Image (tube, rainbow, N blue to C red; front, side, top):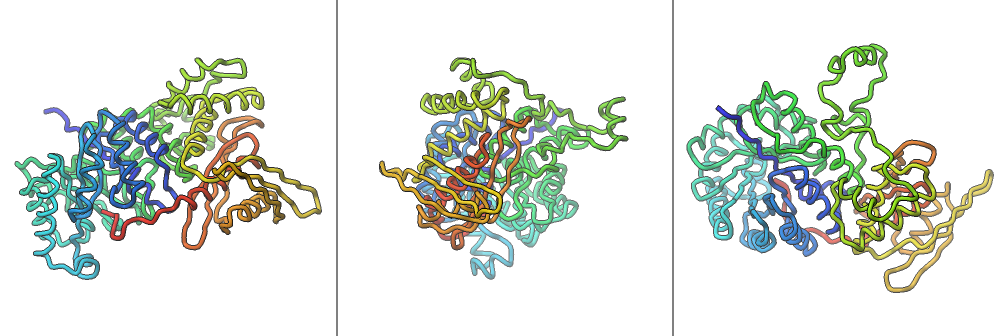
Length: 514
């Protein structure tokens, strides 16, 4: 008997983007969707179309441009939301409407103030209504892991009866434990045996168990897992796609299920792209894609590795993208070689973006002797930041630092209307002075919550990747930039974050969380 295929449902662009400060502009979302399609995921949940005009347009554009993969949009169990999703995904190769409604006693009594009968009726009516627009309908009983099992089974059977093709069981608040969750999924799977319905799971990481709970569900019969790149998402995040896939592939003997459609050599590049575009840094000891994932310092470990690799490594680094970065381009390289390399890295860019990135590549090649793949990726991703609908662009920055003298910085910004503004400020350090000067120009006072610099490549001329998190009133956003000039990269990262504040649009009222 052949192995079942596990459907990988990626929600980086929906639940992942709900992570505070992780919002992306439409160009960035399209690029992430393209990379997910190249990775081989089965379903991309592109967003929550009713939340804002920007989210609707992003989902619509992804549905039009990304081929060969199912494109899903999220909707509450109300006709307005379902209408919005249906319109947004109508051009998709394979459209899916994902409807959710809370079922737990806590949500019924305090959030929805509805009886079990009303929940059953509302879920059935929403699925039946969605079925008018497309055949592929997914239903999620929100907070399923805290719902009475017998009622959960009743809801599942009812939505399948009216046409749901996938029923997703969310551990919405990360409450479940693996053995307990596996038993629950087993009950749900048994309840729909013989019917044309697939059981899915969507686990949150509040107790650090999202991947463990998802794997327990797969063992119990779930055949779709909802996850995100790097595990990003609401609160402590979601199950990490890269960890799920590699756990199943590495322990194929235990799970007996197929994930061969995922091109695992793209996991690392996908992780880095999402990290760069969201501004969320991957911790060094993160499984699979963290910098220390395949590093060994212990003498005993090193000795074992030299004798036989699998004494201390159960995954080949090359299987997930950790290949030695070779020098492929330099200052004498031409445009054709540059284009060929960015295509090999998985990017499909408009001519304007290629031209801008190539100009920056030439500038960088005058500063660096060795150009690495990570340098090229950073240059390309800078263009996504720049081409987004941003108000302020950096024209010039100058910082004066001298021992015993309070640092001072001057910043000049263009305002998107053909004009420019300049300000000078002092601070505790050069970065603080730069931030103060930008605040003067924009009139948006911000508090710098987090500032970090990581080396993207090797050598004293390495590209430095700067990540910042800033806060204005109740809003927190991330910004990111990279360059050999850390002062300039820091300025650009702060400015990227400020531009996100300028672009801020509030979401539609109501829960956006299965």
